[in-house]
Structures are given as C-alpha cells and as structure tokens.
Image (cartoon, rainbow, N blue to C red; front, side, top):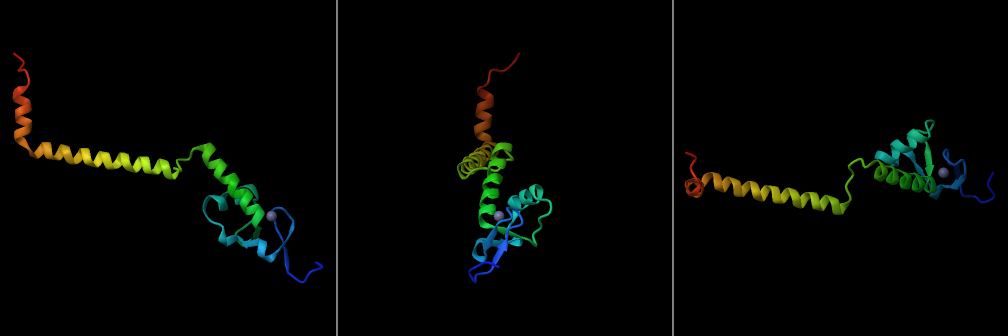
Length: 117
Ligand SMILES: [Zn+2]
C-alpha cells in the first residue's frame, strides 16, 4: 500500500506507480499516437491506462516518426503555401475561362500569328 492516501496506478508501459492525476485512460488517446502505442506495446489496449510521461514521450516519438517518414503531414506553413498555390491555380483558371469566352482576344492573337504557307 502506498503511504499516502491518494490512489495510485501502475502504468502498464513504464511499470511505474503513478498518482491518479498523472494517468490517463487509454481511450483518451487517439490517432497516430494510439497506433504507435499499440505497435510498440502490443499488450496495451485502449482499455488500459497510460501515464502522462509515457504519453508525452510517445507523442514526441510519434511526431519524430512522422517527420522522418515524411508521411505528408504538412506543417502549418507548408499547408499555407499549398493553399496559396491552389488559390493561384484557381485564379489562372478563371483567366483562361475569360480568354475562352472572350473570342475577340483569341482571334486577334490568332490573326497576328504568322500563317504557315
Ligand atoms: Zn508510464
């Protein structure tokens, strides 16, 4: 029994005894971090607990894995760049459509082209 009255839990990952405020229920863990925990600790399930220090460690590990593997997770900056590229694409598409419908412009371009003979 622990000397203090606070209930403690044994983290199934680091096997250390942790006070209740330092453990989370596994079903609060989501996404890639959850997958990483399940891959690295096959006995662990979302029904189990995880302590905060394990969660933080594994979360950092997950982020590192993602960056190393370049899984296409974009940083906010990269996402902004992609978005602005898409916006430019839309603008140039609009311009093309205007050219398409503006026959006068296209005809003047075609008539000014040297004619093959
Ligand atoms: Zn732990």
